[in-house]
Picture 1: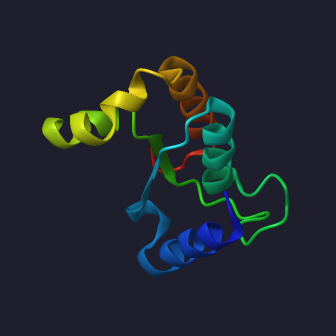
Picture 2: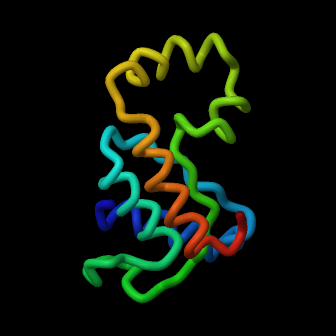
Length: 108
């Protein structure tokens, strides 16, 4: 996750409270999605960004997870995301994000 997005997320958590935020990821690879989830839950593992050492514990999901997919208008999901589902390793992405969410999420 780039430094600017870390800064925005930290600002939103400060302004609205971490218990009121949900981060929805859209990365195409499990490892990248897991790293982003780790960053917003347990802090930046590279210790380079605004979330270095900051354990926000945010709720974090990938857009292909049922918790998000089932709450999106099916026509919009079909138009915007369903084609990507065919080429993504959805099971690996879901497992990776879920692992970090369950380990470090405070507001699951």
